[in-house]
Length: 411
Image (cartoon, rainbow, N blue to C red; front, side, top):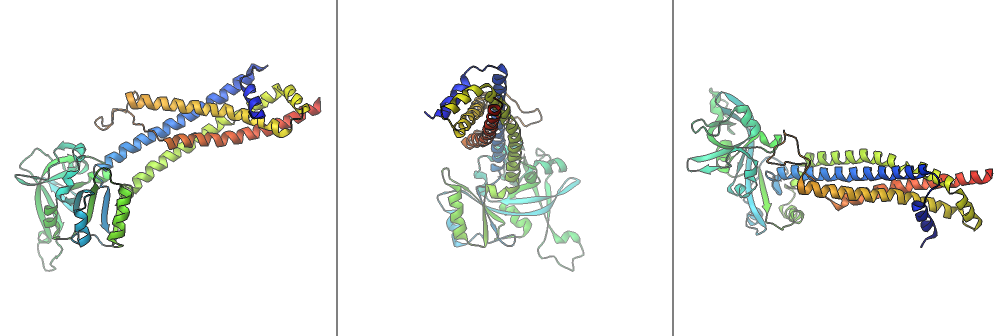
């Protein structure tokens, strides 16, 4: 066994002449333990929140979205897209045609995004979980139906159970005549019954989903689409599939996965997580650097032992390593205990959910604070504590050697 490590371990567990040394060492270890536990718990809570938020968007955001690199629409009836439609790895191939339009219900009106989708859109089994009122139906015996976002529904006061009042949608005609005397002639006006209200997030809740055929008549577009949305069969790697589509579709199209479709959301989640990590790390650093006082007092307590070691031929490097290992063992013991506490907290919160969300949170979505465990977070916390623990212990060991020299000079 390494001599310096052996002596440091004996010093750690041996009885000190002054109880204050044990007290300061214990405070240092507890501080690191609490800081490490807080850091891993906060990171795990952010993992859980990220999973919940992204799952909300997964219900409405496709795994792959193909849009034109230039312009608003493109022709989906190319040889490659027709082959992609029949690809066995594709679970749902949805053609999308969307544009802003004026929506009117009774005496109220608002501008919203009208999104026309083909039948494959309904293969998404998660759509029903977004329904706040009514049902997610786009076709029935009476004809076409629409599903409206909660923000629009609230503003327009749309009643989904009223079978007589329909939503009016106004869209400008492509071939507007300059000689038209009646402004109403410059718009395509279509009525549709609202079957349900969905709620995901504000950016999505200001829109309305309609059948693709209805959108084509409204927008005067017979062939082209705004996007192709693809959901894959279970077990298919999204990144590999995306790379294949990018290669075969060419530069005229943008092919984005879910993260790229929601860049701002991912950026916000990651920024908040790292901001909290940095703040808690600074607090942890303060706890770690308490080890300097503990080791300085330990040096004073063990000055006779150090003098004996020096007389036996121990150099300054050996003495420095003793106190370096001493500081590392104190702080890293606190770190390991903190990680264990974080793991225990994760188990109870994940299993029993004893910390509940506020009353204002939608209980159908999540009732208790979500939490997620990632081994990378444990490695991150362990490495973070290890780095600053080494710096603090190295500084303490250097100060300890200087203190020994001062004591020896006075003797």
